[in-house]
Image 1 (cartoon, helix red, strand yellow):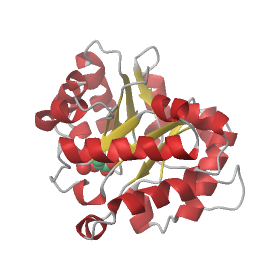
Image 2 (cartoon, protein in one colour):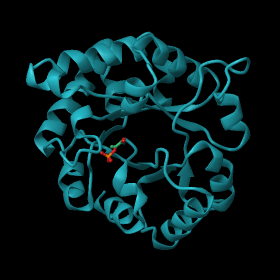
Image 3 (cartoon, helix red, strand yellow):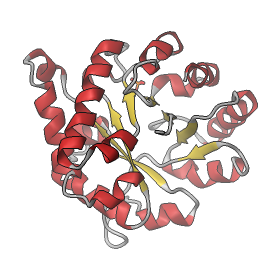
Length: 249
Ligand code: PEP
């Protein structure tokens, strides 16, 4: 059985007070669910979030990390620092990191390998741009992103990987992949992993969909057999919306 997961990526939003307020509203309203529920606050609020969520079902995850364990990398954060404050899952490869911070497949491969090496669970994000889809290259692009960042990894680490397929054209745009488009791509991803590794690994990996998931469309997207949950941006900043999305799973 694959884990169902709903994760909120708060990006560069919410100062300390806002983080505390949103966490306490979420905790109070959290529905009973078998799904894993995660939030990714900004770095400066991670340790505080871990402390306020002691004993809660909500897990705190990070938005990014460096591939080095320590050293002269001004402004960066290491996996070791995350583990040290009780954060053991990290988003890697978000399209905003790729677009605005020059994170290439090569850099991401190093980050993923380093995170896994250090015992950090990776939520790996990938997805095609609008031009890729328009030119019918979306499957090729996704396959390349997976291959370059993940397919050199040993089969044994795949239990520590969560995938988040996020078509770039659907992130923060209000435009969502249709449930059929999501299912088609998720099935392709699972099949690609089965070919690169085996069907047991492919069947066990959770593949989340991300891109303008809202309370109004979550249920239909999550109902698809290869969609195991969602990575939620904008709607995760509003407690009632995030809670409704969790209910939809
Ligand atoms: C994201 O940034 O991962 C995301 C899915 O954002 P949104 O839900 O706002 O499209």
